[in-house]
Image 1 (cartoon, rainbow, N blue to C red):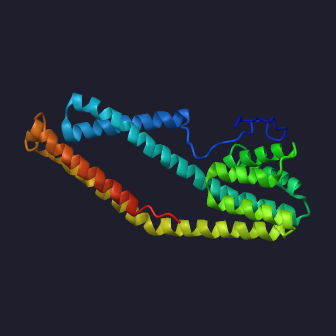
Image 2: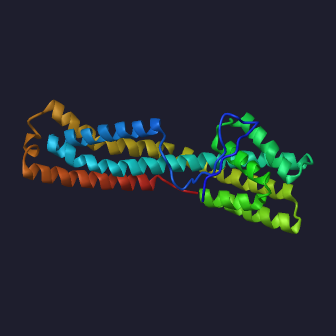
Image 3: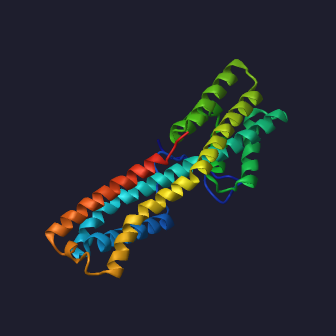
Length: 263
């Protein structure tokens, strides 16, 4: 579907556009940061496990996996922030509706409120600006909400779009529905934060334990350089270190999944 842009008088600093949140694209700053991380990671693995220039170039293509991991992390962070801001938008929308605004005018007021509260350049403000630009050309609000839900893949937004559409057709209390949805999303966010707080110590311990094998190898290289010399520069040593690296990578992945609890 072709992207459409509409100039905004209220928010002239940016264009409103239709964003696919299932695909994350690095900004230039993020890309440079991730590439630097890949360089450090590859260099660190080579120094600790191989100490070979050939191994460094052999390991370089594995940076693709790290780029994918970081892209997933950035994407999840963006969706989480979008969920937080969506709750803010629903609260603002409910207040406007309770003040007597129509649905269309309530979305306009919500855009102004979000620009003040979370910033004009925030993703949620952009989405409401896009929604308002399409409402002005007679696109139904429920259709735009379903489209937003499809682009984010978030269950909360999808459920709200379905309930909003039903309420608009059957004449339900829009204010009560929006407030109930905002309350449900808020409860879910609070549970996530409680889980994050409860697991904070365990996540820190997992990071420390993950770093310990590398720290031990580094310590032995510095304290007793000759103790591990047999493992470097030979086929046998490379095979042993490759096995250790695979076990370490598997343990790191398993530990990360254990402490990653989704609500």
